[in-house]
Length: 145
Image 1 (cartoon, rainbow, N blue to C red):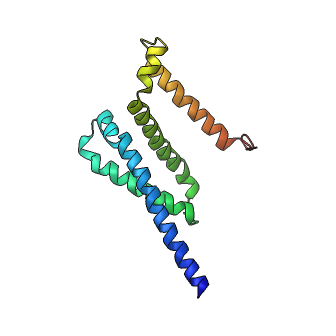
Image 2: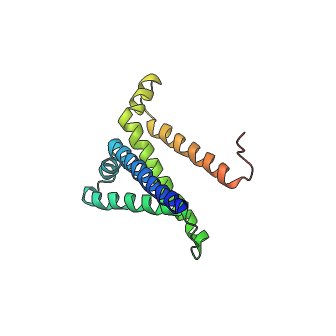
Image 3: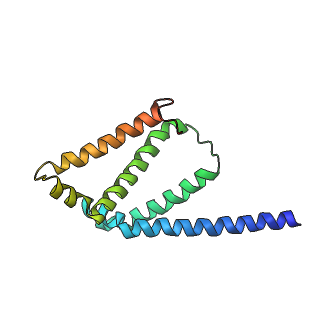
């Protein structure tokens, strides 16, 4: 009986912790303004509910995927698309966060950039892409100490 109680307590603590963390993540995404920023940049204000639903469903499936080993038929075919969509989301999140905290106005003012801010942002994105590709494609590239 005590073992069953320990399992029930673990389930309750796990669910409560998950709700707190997911609430914090969604509060962060909301505070940063990813969805309105994305809708404004793409001129798709009519699809805000679709963006919100996609983020929620992606978070749910991502969490489930972290705990449950699912075998997806032809999974390796879909892996690049999953990576692409995750990269798009994190890129949008990073750009929205950078815009909210005003990174680019500070960088352009301090760096005396009048033109070429697009090239600067593109260089950051390409650098991140190259680093990610090296990490995932080159065996033993990053070995934590």
